[in-house]
Length: 271
Ligand SMILES: NC(=O)C1=CN([C@@H]2O[C@H](COP(=O)(O)OP(=O)(O)OC[C@H]3O[C@@H](n4cnc5c(N)ncnc54)[C@H](OP(=O)(O)O)[C@@H]3O)[C@@H](O)[C@H]2O)C=CC1
Ligand SMILES: O=C(O)[C@@H]1CCC=N1
Image 1: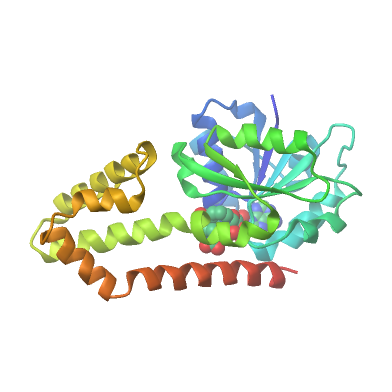
Image 2 (image 1 turned 180 degrees about the vertical axis):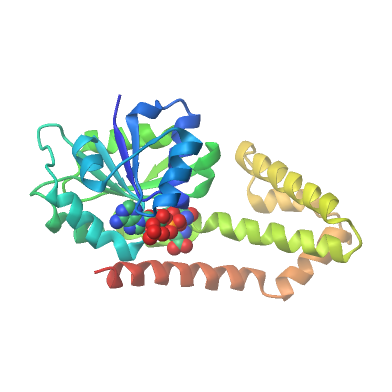
């Protein structure tokens, strides 16, 4: 079995660990290096996972996953590069770090060491993530296939050119937060209309789950699905008119542009 070391046991590191274990990955084939000691202890007790140092994790793993913040990227990769990396065993690095290009890592590693950049999202915690892969300069087809196999156990996998990853980050990396914000706003609005918070939450969550399932399973576009809810002169038309006149589409366009620009900027400043 492929041995995976997760460097950084924060939110996305934990989502990956939990998703892999849930999908049947053996805990003995996973380790985590997390510098915040009480967090490392929490992960060990929740998942039974071995916690270790970056050097030990890197020496023994087939796949080294970087799940630290962009500002920690350089020091972590430098520490990994100091360890006894094994060219024979075809180790590779998978970076989940937003914004930071593979070209920033490659010169710090032994010549030709493969790096794959991935933009995952937190729904991988429940096996419903989407991971978008972009191979670095030295990653071969078999490396990409290995990473695709691992990540397909926690959701869907898509491959793009690396120059599209900042846009991908804006859409699917940050995307869950937009839906959570919409859910929060709808619950608050329901409470404002006199529903209890429990009832409003239950209605919003199930409406989101049902709508997502329709989007996933139907051949119809989001527009066609929306038309089917919109009775002429009815309640939906009244609500959608308000959302549009309050600039919903423009707000999303500006929001995603800001996320993409921020991703690019994080790649530049993470030196
Ligand atoms: N959260 C998300 O939805 C997504 C996040 N990402 C990317 O994943 C990365 C992590 O994000 P997120 O999980 O949200 O952030 P967190 O802050 O929750 O997690 C990062 C973790 O890494 C730890 N860490 C930092 N340096 C080291 C080190 N040298 N050795 C071991 N552990 C270290 C941090 O510890 P400490 O706090 O003590 O510094 C922290 O616990 C980011 O680069 C982000 O861009 C990508 C897609 C989605
Ligand atoms: O907010 C962030 O920067 C990270 C990257 C995508 C999701 N979370």
